[in-house]
Length: 309
Image 1 (cartoon, helix red, strand yellow):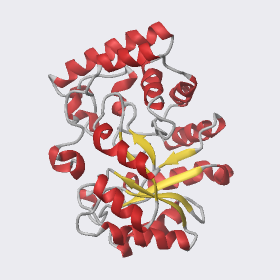
Image 2 (image 1 turned 90 degrees about the vertical axis):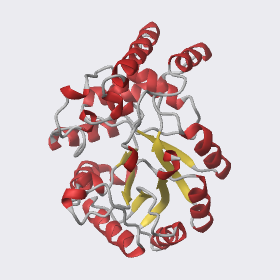
Image 3 (image 1 turned 180 degrees about the horizontal axis):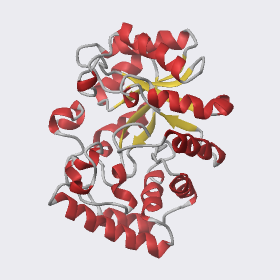
């Protein structure tokens, strides 16, 4: 609603958040980085949920060095002092006295995960945070963090188009009893059917640079979307709903966070929770997209360490 997908309208975004609450959505996800160091995303969310704040779960994240506006999103900083600074800012921006779920946004190789988990554990003991989460962490990091402060949730990209968590990550978190929150469950918009080549997106939209939208990959992924759309139409649902229903069918411990700025699309997303796919439909989806999308999800230099190996 504030970065990465072109220009946005804060009033419409607030209306979408409030509509989500009316439709039964109770988990809202943001991060310090989404505000580009100025808190715009957290401020937007704080304003929107203020009338019903105690009835929803607010999740935010720390972990990036935000000191240079021209270089946001590339440098990490999870030093304990920085974690506390971000947490205090988030509390103020979100207009709340506690953060329900505080994630480390990306693993910082320069800070032992035990120090990170210990600092969040202190914030939990102080009543400023309720639960500790990790994002894009590998099995070893998850286990080490969990041994210091229980990890409640792991957030990592997962969708019909992105399947890399299935082999290494899901087995570990299920062993430890950790919930899973897939981000980009709609493939950053590819799984909506409303797609166009990279050159058709503005420069401030990440899809103009995303590898999955580039020539060669784009055509292969578009063909997969067309096959998924045909399957969805047989069921009388949208391809977006099919993709979300597939994700929900992967386990009761999975809670996807589809993003949208549009109240109508939001209602379609929520309705996917009422769709139960048959074994034949799940098998057909697997046949269409056996290994995920063509193209990498991030430039190689920005790939999370566990998935780059």
